[in-house]
Length: 327
Ligand code: F6P
Image (cartoon, rainbow, N blue to C red):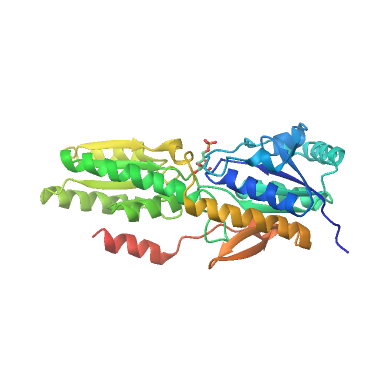
């Protein structure tokens, strides 16, 4: 028979994402509703290793649903990836009597949870909190919608000035390993080209298209580049283009961390609330060591050991849409 979970620890880990606070709030309030005790673990796995853990009440999460960042703070904890670090973390959890964990983060955080749950008898449930949307087993991740809307708002503004000056702009968005922010924001702003880590870029073809547009005096172009594309971001792409097409007035704009901050969108607040609620239900029902995603607007549970093996893929159809709509 599966162990009954009575004391939950909740943490946020990896890059922060708008909506993490809404998820923490949902976990705390659902846990308390079911008569559980809930503990906040500060700075992701670091707080587990260093015993930075405190008891949360319903009012600890008042007035946070609309706030970006994470009240629990976050980190990428190297110590937790060592057996000694995980042992310390386990002992700290035991001193508080914590017998279930909710981990809100991306694939790196899930990897940590999976290793930990294999070694120790503390069931873990993950919630996908990352602006990158690169986790297989869910249609959306907490934070993606807000981040992509921040990028869209910024790119729309850049188009205004690009248009006024007849300039080519290379805009870099976040995504070290994932092109979803670039893809969605690029399509939504009518970008002429979108460069992502998941696909090889035919730079010669882009230069040919730009030269042809130059000939037709169409000089306004937006190229959206994910920071982790094969050229390593917008600066290098701009350098290549300037060398090959000296007449083009090229400007670079790196959107950077503004994409991670800000008040979460309604959509992110909603999915965070539903997922946080479901994470506690999972711990109550004995559905252990899974992450809670959403597929076709329903909760979807993927074992953590499967989740860490797969990345969300970008379909060929997306790439076709980009090509057709930009022509
Ligand atoms: O949270 C995901 C992410 O924003 C990636 O898109 C980006 O490459 C990375 O985090 C940046 O992390 P950091 O803020 O630690 O440099």
